[in-house]
Figure 1 (cartoon, rainbow, N blue to C red):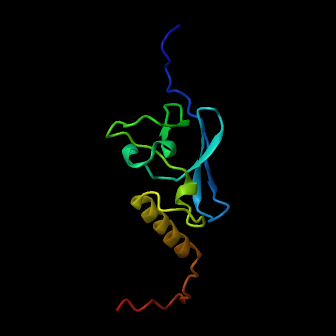
Figure 2: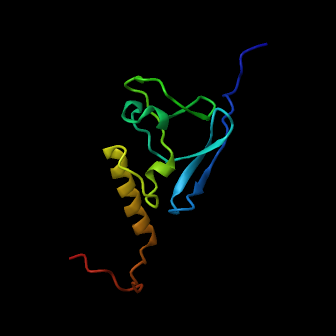
Figure 3: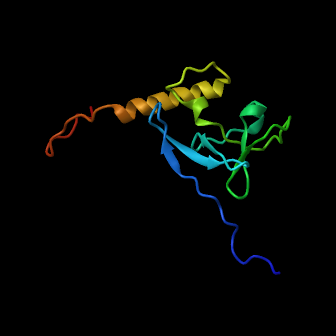
Length: 127
């Protein structure tokens, strides 16, 4: 039995659209091999997130709720998309989460806004 010559295999989850708001979310396996939908590209410091909402990424790509209090001051975590979904009415859990929900709502508005019509020879007036 020798050392592995290749990197450990990571479990693939992928991305899917939220059925409520239509934004993309990461589909990730949990330690128990269930799926959880996490907010993509958001990795807050773990101590800024309540213990029951901290999802820590493991080396094989799975995630688990990290309830250690207090966490390491430099530990990063993930949060569920449902907490940041602009289509769900939720209480103001943390100020930064409210800001994230507002940013997601603006992103949704930009994605659903119609494109202004321009002809091929006409450029908009840039002032």
